Length: 282
Image (cartoon, rainbow, N blue to C red; front, side, top):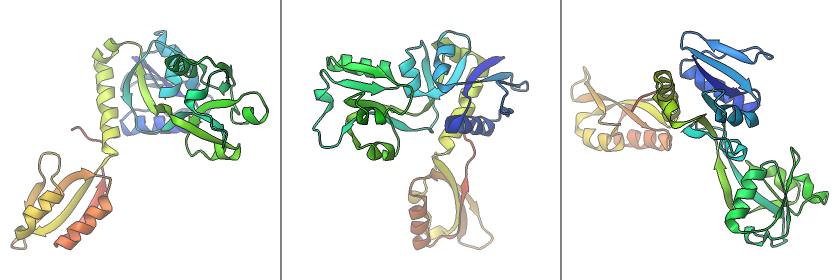
C-alpha cells in the first residue's frame, strides 16, 4: 500500500480530493479524520498541513504528496516533482511601497519580510545581495506599514491584498507555483501502483485542456472541416442516412472552443455538440 500526503484544508485540499476522485480513488474523510484508506486501489491518504507535506515525503515517511511548488522549494526537503497538477496557480514576487523606485536589483541592506525565507535567501544568493530576511507566518503585507520591513516577498494571486497595503510587485516572479505531486526519490516511479496513479492523474489533468466536438457536415465540405478539427490522430467519420452527409467526432482544445463552433457553423456544419472529457490517455 502506498501512502500519499494531501493538504488537510483549504482550496488546495478540496481540489486535490476532487482530482483523485476523478482519477478513480476514494479519499472521502470526516472533518477530524487524518487518514483515509482506499483498499481497492491499495492507497492510504494522510491529511497534513500543506507546509509540512514535503518534510514527511523528503524524510521517506510517506512515498508521495500533493503540495505547492513554493512550499516544496522553501522546505528544502529531498523531494522530486513528479507531476504538475494544473491548479493552485500563483506567483512568488518581491513587493515594495508604490513609487519608491525599489527594484530587485536594489535590495542590498533592506529588510525583507516573508513566509518563505529559504526561497528568498536562495534568490538573494543568486543576486549576490546582502539583505536581512525576516520570517513571518502570516499578514506579511502589513509588515511594511508597521515598520517591520522595507520590502516583502510573498505569493501573489489577484494582487488585491498588496494594493490595499499600498504595495506593488517589482521585477519578474521569483517562482511560478502550482499544486504538484512530489516523491521521495526517482525510483518511486518504478512502483506499479505509482505508475498507475501517475497515468490516471495525468489523464485527468490533460483532459481539462480538451473537449469532444461532434457535428454533421456535407461531404463536399469535409476537407475544410477536418482542417478545423484535425483531432489527435484524425477525426472519426461516420456516414449519415442523409446522402452526402457525414458525422464528425474529434478531440479539440478547450481554448477557443466557442470560436471553433462559430467557424463550423459558418462553414455549414449542423448539430454541433461539445462534451466535457473526464479523463484520457494520449
